Length: 179
Ligand code: IMP
Ligand code: MG
Image (cartoon, rainbow, N blue to C red; front, side, top):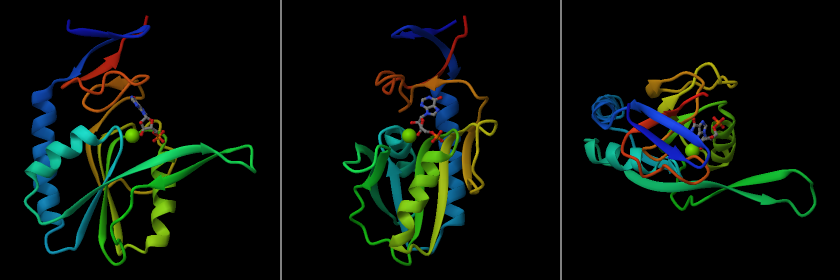
């Protein structure tokens, strides 16, 4: 059994790179069909989606703008709560079809924040493509248009996804081993 250790946790091979590659090809084909003729802006959500987005964009047969965004946390000076701001949008999104590219959707709270932050930019429509989706953990109602793999509610690393900063550069996806 192929395993990797990161900090205190051990992970076992879960989705090999060949399967990821096939899935990314399928998604690219589907997107290329569905989004033909639209004015597209792909917004890649950093950091986790960098590897997925890179492979997906190469396989996409469409003219499209690609830009990178990040939800940055900072301590509000007034409020005690954490405020998150969407940084990196320097594209004009008004009346465009925005495709959010995510690595994983878990509770969906990040997605909800992204959608709220995009609203003032008045896109024509927003589509969501996520390589991984944890349906059992999902707490939101927004439809995930394109999902690569539906996975159980377990922690995974690799192919962009990290555990405390490490594991992003693994070419396969690994799942945590319970002791
Ligand atoms: P959310 O719960 O849908 O808001 O997901 C928040 C973020 O948690 C994701 O964008 C990932 O960065 C991270 N995350 C959720 N599940 C995992 C996982 O299994 N492995 C690594 N990161 C995860
Ligand atoms: Mg992420």
